[in-house]
Structures are given as structure tokens and as C-alpha cells.
Length: 225
Image (tube, rainbow, N blue to C red; front, top):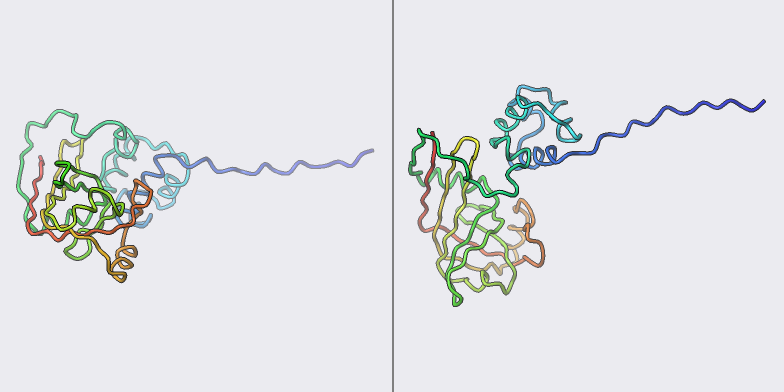
């Protein structure tokens, strides 16, 4: 009679991480929050926050709203419904108004974002390019290719603009800074900028040439209810 064998218990394989989890993690880390801090904002357990980030979770609308509120974003952005459509397609709210922002608030808002647009004029005409950026003191720093149109704009006045649009609430703000842009060649400064940069340029490729701009004037506006 043959030896009886016992099949081992099946190994539990965690469900694959979903796009929602990746977006929640990215936004949480952008804000500098721990999972526990996010859970406290949402009124949930830290273990549930971990579950949402690590598994293919499908929270109900109530929890999605709580997550979006805790992360300072919208349900549409968390669920990826805005990735292929331009912002601002919704109808305006009747009770919205446009207000100016003070310089201190403009600087604060600049420091919370990682993508802005640089507008400049060169021999080819007007141009505006999106860039990943970081604020270091009073400077706005970003990277580009060494021989790009943007790199050739060193020594000229440029405009730098960053904004945020909340389609769900029909609210948003924009900040524009103006000042001279220059290339960074000092090795110590370059090393420092690499150290404080939040991420590599999304465009990839040899975007290793740092440029900085110190605003000589800065203005902003907010649309709010």
C-alpha cells in the first residue's frame, strides 16, 4: 500500500496592487504623511490605509470621499478619471468668486507642487514648457537638457506658472512668478539640488542641467466658493 501524502495548504497570494493604491501612496508621500496620519484624517484604521495602498482594494464611495478629503484631492483624481481629460470641463458654480492671493500665500502654494510651466521668448518665438521643479529658499529650480531651448534661455526673463484645479468642487488657484533664469554650474549647488529634488524629471532622458529662477514679482489668484 502506497504512502499517504497530505497536500500542503495553499499559499495565500496577495492581490495585485491597484492603480488606486498607487495614487493614494503617491499623493500621501507628496504631502509627507504617514499611513497613520492619513488614517486619522479619514477616520479609519491604519491597517485599512495599508490595505488600500497594497492590495487591489475597491472602497465604497464614502471611503473614497474620505480618502480624497484627507489627501486634499478629488475622487476623480484618485480613481484616474481625469488622466486623459483636461481639467476645468465642468460647469461653473453660481457662488464662486475670484480673489487675489498675497505674496506669502503664493510662495506657500509654490512649495506644495512639483510640476510647473516655464514661459519664455527666444529666437524661435514664444514657448512654454512643463517642468518638474523644487523650491529651495526663494529660488525655483528645475532640470532640462543641456542644449535645449530652455537651457539657451539663461540670462533672460521668464514666467513660471503653477496651478491646481479641483473639478469636483469647481475650485482652483494659479500662481505666476516672473524673474531672470540662470544655469547652475557650481558643483556644490548642483549636488544640493539633486539631494533636495523630490523626483526625477518625468520626461526622462538626459535632463541633468539645473536652472534656477528667483522671482522678482509674484502674483496669484484663487477661484473658490
